[in-house]
Length: 305
Ligand code: PSU
Ligand code: MN
Image 1 (cartoon, rainbow, N blue to C red):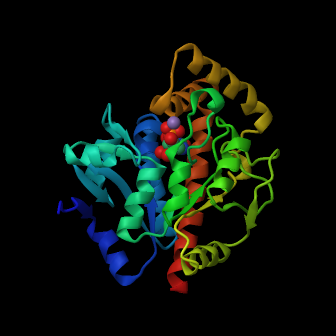
Image 2: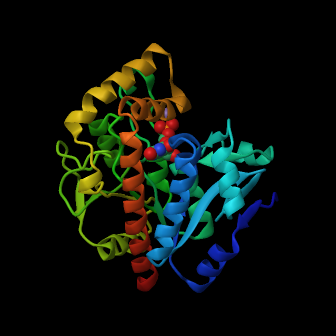
């Protein structure tokens, strides 16, 4: 049997051993989602926010072939500055590790790692979904499938408005993934609080989230649940303002023949340019907001056990 090259940091291990709340964090947002140095500043701020809210952060990445759950300051710094880091999803995680490679984990890969370590909650910015033009490109993120089979509660600001959101909701419904808006009826759309699509479900407290998580376990349902937490009001970029920018960025991607794994990072970078950096400020605000709700939900799950 091949032993799993797994490094759980001492702080995360202690929290897991004592049943204390832990929140998993992805690393693709650091390597592919935000520019240097805001990526490192944000990664650190997310960890601090989670600690301030009573949980232990566990940032996850593959470093030199080892699956790291909880990273020290040096590791985080190196990852944030690294260039050409692989973006790992379910399909490529094992190959990267077998070769001794380094890679950042997407939502799908982070969920796989969180489940392995016994972590119930994962906070991030946005999940992948059905891309616009998917009827031609077939580009549907592996994140959706992962949500249907790996029992982790994912707190995100909805699905990014660069996606085809109605199709994303349809696929999640087909896969049996609960999509619950937090504290409102409408589906948040990442940079905006959301006004056009109704969310399938609604929850209003971290305890509601925890109870639903535990009930899925009791039912022996394999998948996770998606909590769509709206961006704070003062950080929102209204949908009307984002719409033409997203259309433009999508066109530019098409013109340059960008597809596959490169598409989401390209669109985020292009939207950053087209908004003069405002999309990044919004992104940072919503991730920190998700870190708070993730920590609160992890606490409630821990106290229900
Ligand atoms: N949300 C962000 N920035 C990101 C991502 C999400 O604000 O970089 C990443 C996540 O890691 C997510 C991935 O899992 O994009 C989806 O990529 P794809 O569409 O190629 O599946
Ligand atoms: Mn894709």
